[in-house]
Image (cartoon, rainbow, N blue to C red):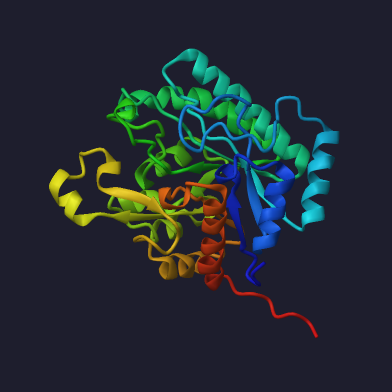
Length: 315
């Protein structure tokens, strides 16, 4: 752990073929401090990085929590948070209800574990405007935040617009994509338990400053994802920002894209951030095999560890 309190981790979704114990051991072998554990209900994934279950919270008990804590302690690895990224505001009632119900189970499991952090998406009906989504956002999320308050758990909303395919056009499947919307969200749901799982890469491909918002939302940054994005400027000039984003950008490992990591970490230090920074591997160049994905985690650790100050060992 850095002497400033920041902890370096990774998102377990990139290791779907490993057990929980193997994920924790991988983190320890590479030198990470923590892991964000994926908690999807066991099912067939409907998109990349979804459907990964390293912690099944469906019937989670105190005994289960003790077992998980014991495994983490044996590996010397912390749990940065529990992750589940569905669309709670999906226009299909069954999909929405399933997501909301399971998200409640994730919140309760986090409390049992003593983790205190759940990361997710707000969701969105992508066929409707922000204003038209807003009443339903409040209807769904006020009770979820109340539950988080009751359980003593923070919620970190990731800022990915979830706009990567024709099915998600034109609005994307996550409202919380910009500082303007964050301001409105936190004004209408002011609980300090309700905050951000901040990923700078999603601001980069939207042509937005990814560093300055950290200052304004310092007290809402509950968790950080470390992912990079490479913008193909020639392609962007050819297709424009109204094209599908994957036509002009690609998610890449930290250090291989356009996120200004020195300025980003300088701002995290400036605002006094003391939480996890978790690598989210979504780089297709490293996804052809388990060995490639493990190499991506090693490379990301090597690059990002430079920005976290190590406490000198005691003689």
